[in-house]
Image 1: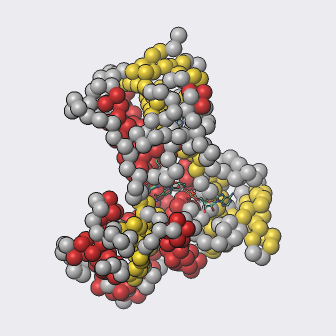
Image 2 (image 1 turned 180 degrees about the vertical axis):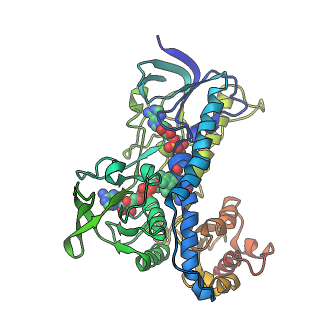
Image 3 (image 1 turned 90 degrees about the vertical axis):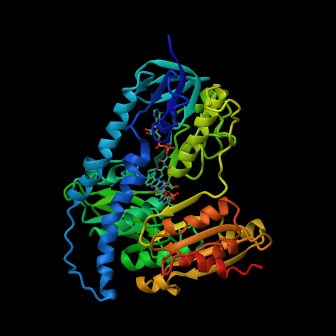
Length: 473
Ligand SMILES: Cc1cc2nc3c(=O)[nH]c(=O)nc-3n(C[C@H](O)[C@H](O)[C@H](O)COP(=O)(O)OP(=O)(O)OC[C@H]3O[C@@H](n4cnc5c(N)ncnc54)[C@H](O)[C@@H]3O)c2cc1C
Ligand SMILES: NC(=O)c1ccc[n+]([C@@H]2O[C@H](COP(=O)([O-])OP(=O)(O)OC[C@H]3O[C@@H](n4cnc5c(N)ncnc54)[C@H](O)[C@@H]3O)[C@@H](O)[C@H]2O)c1
């Protein structure tokens, strides 16, 4: 007989943060097949950003000569120390602590196995058990894609084939690495491993890196990457053969020069992520998937199945942690309302706010953006005005000796409201926040520029000047 719970949560990324005080005391099951804490904590946002820091230090030290300081170029990289600072000293402790905490709660049952739906609100666990619940939250995330090429179709760290799941825990740095892909993951890791002294070749099948960004951001980043390491655009991998004696891989490439070969010691495949809904067989639970395999949810994060909510990478196209966290807060509230457990007796269900979803890429320099690009606004026929502020044309930009940073803002000429912002440059992920705030609260561009002080001569003057530059009445 299946064990019945009040609530089952599948996935311990943002799913684990769902259990608000209002839900405590319910009979809750948490199902997790991997490491407690999910992608962001264990193999995603946090370890990658901890890796980017030492990489940035190396690049900055090389750049210091422009400021009149020559730092000896004999950079010593202690990979085990870098890796262990991240995982042994921090991440693994947090993951284990999170699991212990949940297992210690007498109203929570942790099932450390893979689940799949076998009926409405009914799961079969890999252990052979079945469990059911009145309510289920699907927070099963996404997984890294591989390539349909023999040798690169499965992860094999011992043979030097990695995804983001394994590459940060390598025993030692390879001498040469191919990074396949031109998105967030590929660009962040190409920056990291190049800075740490690996001979990186990044293989991007289209004509620029980060093609979803505003064109000047994508082009600017592509140009900078090309100056740093071997970047092959319009190039795809056609074959992969490993020499077991040397451990080297010979990749057959197709690119602008026809068929060529590349020899490397490791390959990092970073070509996107697939949401886990299909593998979870959600359709057996009456949960619809869209054409991209994304769980269909309404604005309140309800799936098409009664009593089942979903959040995060499994059910949104952004695949970003702050979006998963926002949706988890929405689901927690809506569950509490549905259960009659909300703190306020007249609480109503709420909707997720996906109006201004920002993202940042922690390469070098950083990228941050929200809202449509110029091309997307044009395609949609939206009226807009724009201004691009160069970082180097502001006081702090002079201090930084910046020659490549920029911030483009798009605004609605009729209302003066900010539609989008796209930034390439130092601290872009922080710099863009006042613009996200202004857009979210419906503040007009010129009011934001003139309605407050901007510390002089701080980097934030880039934002002030971009807003003032917009041709608005
Ligand atoms: C290298 C990398 C860097 C990233 N950097 C950033 C960043 O800087 N900023 C940012 O915003 N986002 C970043 N992301 C994206 C971010 O990590 C994800 O958007 C976020 O973690 C998604 O959270 P989630 O809760 O939806 O899923 P996850 O955290 O993936 O949690 C899902 C959990 O469900 C479990 N699961 C799946 N299927 C089953 C099943 N059938 N049975 C049992 N358990 C199951 C999985 O094991 C997993 O632990 C990065 C991702 C990667 C890969
Ligand atoms: N800083 C961040 O917020 C951050 C960092 C890393 C990842 N993420 C999230 O993780 C998700 C996945 O990142 P990602 O970089 O893997 O995916 P992505 O979708 O951003 O980029 C995939 C890249 O792989 C290329 N590609 C796809 N198939 C290919 C093939 N067969 N051969 C060669 N190239 C191919 C694409 O052209 C693209 O450049 C992102 O959507 C992002 O939301 C976020």
